[in-house]
Every structure is written in structure tokens, then in C-alpha cells.
Length: 81
Image 1 (cartoon, rainbow, N blue to C red):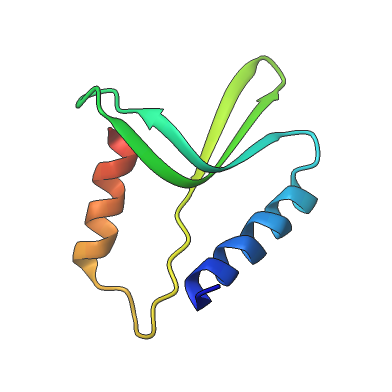
Image 2: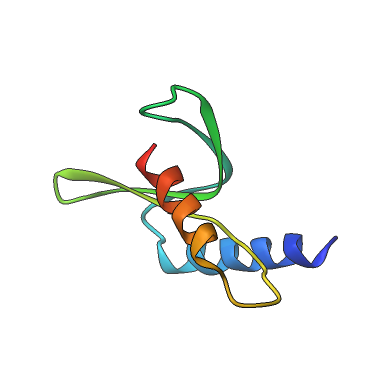
């Protein structure tokens, strides 16, 4: 198993332990609102806290240096879709 795969598994296990009442899916597929394309998500957390349904998207990236602004902007665009 590659380092990034180990990292993803560690994050998944930690989130599963932290959000016990939520549905947590590794390698989920979500249809984009704007593009209508299926998008891959490393980890998807879905919960019905109170009356509202909530989705948390987690992208697991194992960078060896600081994340640049372009990577952050790409993630924001991904979330908006």
C-alpha cells in the first residue's frame, strides 16, 4: 500500500470513530450540481443533525510541501459543483 493510501485509511478510520452516528463512505461518487458529472470524493460524511441533512466532503492529500493557492481554489470550485 502506498503512503497516500495509508494516509487515506487513517483519516477514514479517525472520522468513522469521531462521527459514529453519521454515514461515512470512502471513495464516494457525487453528481455535480453544475456539471452533472459524477465526481469522486475521498471520504463523504452524511448526517441528519436536527432537521437538516448535512454533507461533509474530505479530500485526503499527502503533500510534502505547503499547499499553494491554486490547489485551494481548485478544491473550492470542486465543492461549489
